Length: 275
Image 1 (spheres, rainbow, N blue to C red):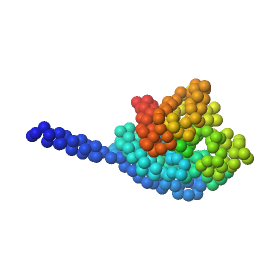
Image 2: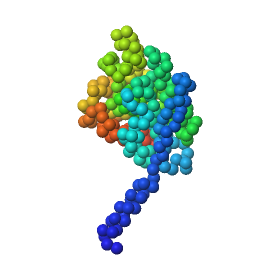
Image 3: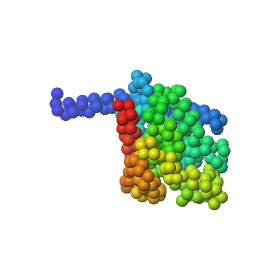
Image 4: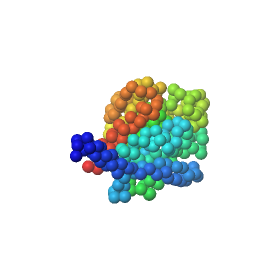
């Protein structure tokens, strides 16, 4: 057999090996009792999920105007990461503009309760999950980056690790943007709501070592300054965290790269707890 033929056979074998393992992507219907409606989510499980015992879970939150399908559509490589890291990924739906809190303005919008109580409970009931904070992480992009940190800071009994990609971690500089006033009321009328729902004002809930944290934002992003401010505040209060700044803006090109760092960070957290 000539060397060229051997090389081609080797390439074919490697391709077959790479396609032999493929994470499973399911779209599921979950029910929110607090909002009285069915909400879809994408659940990604490893190829050999059926042979596994309990697995850690990473909850992914989409950005403003997005949906539960955004990550598998725009960052499909996360399916390979599920196989590599042997975890479950849940791409939750937070409506296009919920900001992932229980809105004091729109009382029908209760996505904090849905994500951190109802969806987590649904996953634990229907999948083989590690059913405590040591096996759960949450992250997201933009609105979802804010949501992930907001939920993790306020529900440290639920999540052991959290991240943010280009997160809107301080809402106050943006009183006229992204339907925030629909969720919080006008800033001029309800400044205390904007203060209470901004992640940067919730760092008092943290103690050193209480959460494993990773924060990432592009240097050209319009949220760069508020992320830098959060980083400095965490430093002042001695809260350990990974902080990543790379060239880039508020784009899927940036987030497709960023999510790989986040999943690696969470894998190391899970491995440390369950080694």
